[in-house]
Image (cartoon, rainbow, N blue to C red; front, side):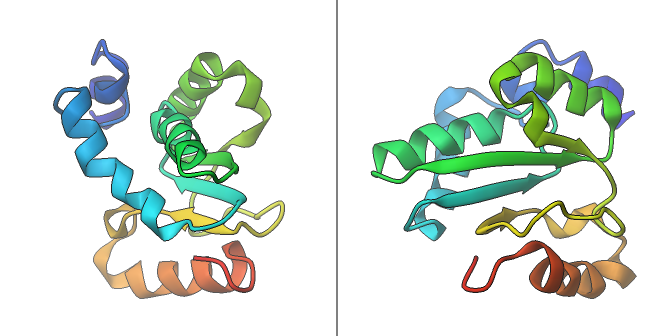
Length: 139
């Protein structure tokens, strides 16, 4: 159901699982930039169509930071959509499960949501992100 809803949304925010207009998108997502504070790599876990990757790179640039975005999604068709929307970053969009994906390297910044793991595995997910996904000193 989730895959179908995203793919049939008809606009980039809906394809990213977000309801609302551009102003609402920015109000809800732009605060993520406040956690960046320097140049680095950024992994969006649950990237869907890549809109957050694209937005964060632009917003961080406005703040004077260069962010190299990457994405991970469990659903192959959503990762394909991100690759299609962002062909210059196609090789940065991965398909995998956060609980067992093999990280190609550690990232400076990682963004995810707890709902991506069953409640009884959320602690494990966060511990895995901190120990395997995040570079020393990362956020």
